[in-house]
Length: 345
Image 1 (cartoon, one colour):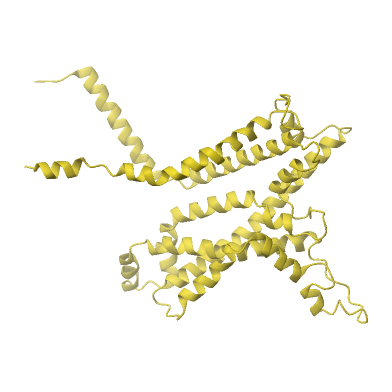
Image 2: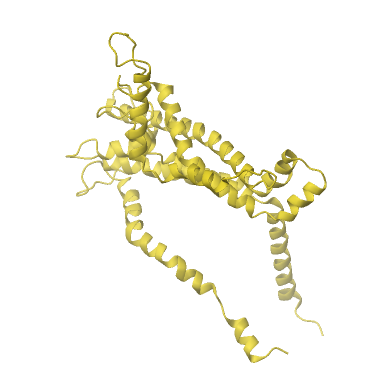
């Protein structure tokens, strides 16, 4: 029979401490983020212009951005074409940096966590690989502009001798090129984020029960078989998280595509949807296009939500769902019997 002290221990709930720990986030979110988010949805359905005397226009802003405009509507045609061109840039740059990023991060994560790899200085290499992630985007953009800029005095063009008029070597136009600029942004994104992805994947690998790897080694499995039969299947949860965070970050990519240009003109070869939102907001400082900017933000929000839901649906645990379905059916059947049959003596 349980004592009074044991009953008191069992009755203690520690759930409240979890709520206390996450409370600061929700307080800050409600104060600083919730109102701008709601205001964005409100502005998306109002006419463009200042924030005072807004006129409700319904879905007109979305139609202008998404639907093909009439031939004589040059303003709408420019907004529509620009949005879809920037959307194309966004998808190309995200796919082009996510695939090599996840491949490199997964390879390094497996390498660093493999007990059979005896490499000194693993901690040092982890820190060095993670360091680009903490450098500000403005600094990174300045660094790569000085390295690969179109000027004759960028590092790569100086090495080719473009700064010497006697040689007559034309400077490389990497920043203003279409695919050269896109590949450069892809490389920068991989360089900045693969360390963070590697750390997350390493945490997932280290969370796998070591006895599974020991059993595989005893059975004579090589590194490739261990990876495909044990490591990769059990990394499903962290891989889904990595895919979601990368997808959200990729669709909202702004810093590098916005800053990586020469002069005061944004490079439209690498401009993303987030840059489109900024451009619409600051297109005319006397009368900013709040409606188009907010509508583009809502469109981006909807696309991200749909893709996120699709990822969860594809990666769902079918066995767990089937068990939960059977459990619900059993509970429903038990309730039906209790309600209809009553109790027998």
